[in-house]
Image 1 (cartoon, rainbow, N blue to C red):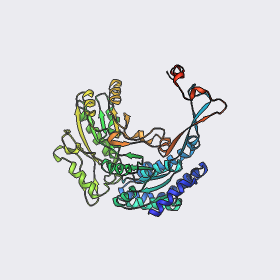
Image 2: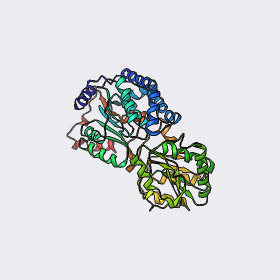
Image 3: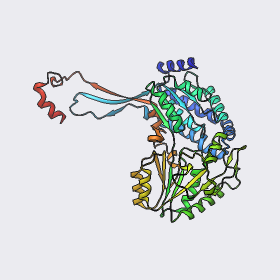
Image 4: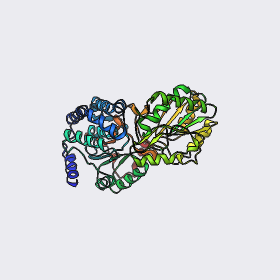
Length: 450
C-alpha cells in the first residue's frame, strides 16, 4: 500500500491530472462505469442494507450520475481564473485568483449510503484535478467490492485507487501525509480522523451528524408535515445522517400529528418489511434496541435480529433525560417531545451541540425567523426534510460537533482546490513613496490608508 500511496503522490506532482480535458474525460468514464455496473450496485445495496431498487437508484446511483453531469457542465467555469478588484492605491497592479488541485486526497466513506457518500466527494476530487485514495466502509462489504471493481476498471491506480479493510487499514492510511482528508461518519471516529490529520497539518472535511431536531408548531400543515417527516425519518431505515432525530411538537397538535405520521408509515410501507430497509449489522441493531423504552413506546418496534429488521418505532412522553436523547439515534426510532412556546425551544437548542440539520414546520413567519436566526446548525429546511441535500448549488456541511467544511457541486470542487492569490505589477511605474525611509512620508501614508 505504501508503494501505491507514493506513486499517487508522485503522479499528483507530475501535472498529468491538471488539464481540463483529462478531468472531463475521467468524469465521463466514471459516469459510464456506474451505468455499466448499475445492476451489480443495486444487488450490492440490497444485500448490504436491504434497499429497494427505487430507493437505491434515487438516493445513490441516480444522485451520483446527476452530480457528474453537473460537474462536467460547469467545470470550465469553475477552473477559470477569477479577476478581483484592486484598491486604487495599488496603482499599476492587477489581482487574480487561480485554482489548482490540493494534490493527494483520502476519502473515507460510511456504511449508510456506501456508494453515494464515496462517489459524491470523489467527483469533486477528480474535477479539481487530484489523485485519490478511497477507503469504503467495511460494514457494507458488497457495495465496497463493486466500488473497487468500478474504480479498478475505470482508473489508473496512480490516479484513483481503492483499498478495502477495517479500522486498522483506515488507521494506517491516516498515518500517511495526504493533502486533504474527507471523512463521513460518526463524531467519535471523526475525532480520531481529525487528530490523526493534525500530525501532518492536513486539512480535513468532516461530515458527521448529531441530533437533528424536527420542530412542528401549532400553525403547521399537519397532513403535509406528517408525510414529509415520515419520509425523512424512515428512508434507509432511519440510517441517514440528516434524518429527523427527534420530533419536538407543540402540545396542542402532538396527538393529531403523531396519528398522521403513523398513518403515513402505513401508506409508505404497506407490506413491511417488504419495501423497507434493514439495519446494517447486529452491533447497530443491538444499540438501537437499547435506546427503546418500551414503557414509552406508542408505535412499532417489531424486530428480528437474525434478519436485522427493525420497523419504525415512535416513543412518546420523552424527556432530555431518556437514553434515546443522549446520542444520535441513527435508526428508525422517533422520540417525541412537546413544547408550549417556540422561544423555549430556541433557548434549549442554544445549549445543545450544533446538529447537522434542523427542520421546522410552521406557517408563522415570526416563529420561522426566530428559529432559523437564533439556532446554530449545519443546514435547514422549512416545511420539509432532507431536500436541502439534493440542490447542487447549495453547500452541504455541519458546524461544530456536526462537522467541518462543506461540499456538493461547486463547493466540492472548491473543497479539493487550493485558491492562489496572484498580483501582477507593472515595472513602468515605481513611485518612491512605496520604499523607506518613511519618516518624511507618514502624512501621505496616513491619507492613503485611512
